[in-house]
Amino acid sequence: MEYMQDTLLSYKGMQKRDLILFPHRIAPEKQVEIFRDLATHLPQYEFVVCQDQELTKNEYHNLLGEAKIVFSASLQETLGIGCYEGALLD
Image 1 (cartoon, rainbow, N blue to C red):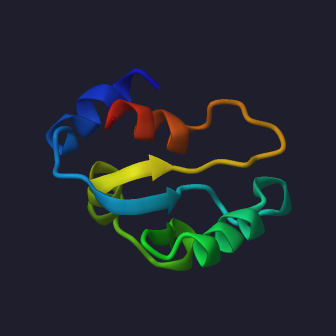
Image 2 (cartoon, helix red, strand yellow; image 1 turned 90 degrees about the vertical axis):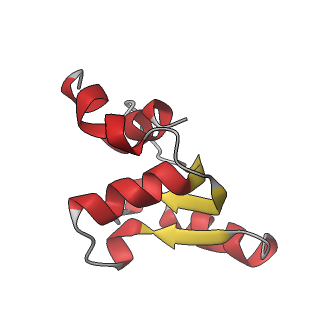
C-alpha cells in the first residue's frame, strides 16, 4: 500500500472536524452496528458510514482528511486500507 502515501499527499494537513468515519464495507465481520450504536452515545460527533453513500474517491479522501477518527471494530483486523489511509492522514 506504499503508493497510497503519494496518492493522499494533497489531503494531508486538512482542517480536522468532529467527524468519525467507518471506512469499511458493510459486512457482519466489520461490526457496523457497534459504530452506529456509538453514534447515539456521542451526539457531539458526526458519524459517517462511507458505504452508506456513493462517494467518489475525491469525496472519500476529503472525508478522511477531515476526520478526527477512523473507526474499526473488525473481528479480524488485518490493517486494511481504510485504517492505513486514516493513519496516513493523521
